[in-house]
Length: 116
Image (cartoon, rainbow, N blue to C red; front, top):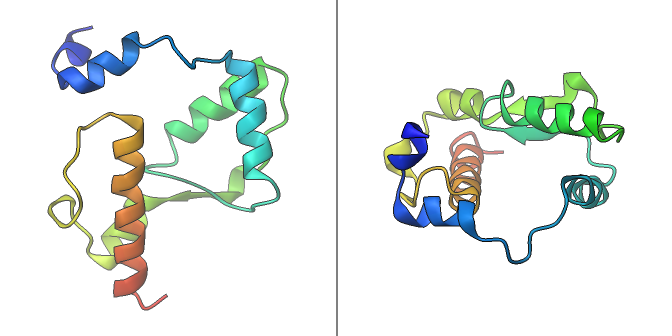
């Protein structure tokens, strides 16, 4: 609770919004459909978000659409390409949309620097 209380007001407000919320199982099924036949799952560290999603899918009896060896980590890529937080948009931290935009900007910059 203390950690969340130290986050921005906008980020905390997202926790309270009930409109457009859907049950976890439905969200996971929609995510799996969106993921489709993609091979890799990217996250900012493959030991947190993907673990949470895998566990939620197991709890909901949904098969994870990727293999454990197909997780990819943006932190490693950013380190190799020398992409630093100061190089990326500085939106609200721990806000899902802003975190996503931050990671995508980092990926594009890393690919550009590595000429991929």
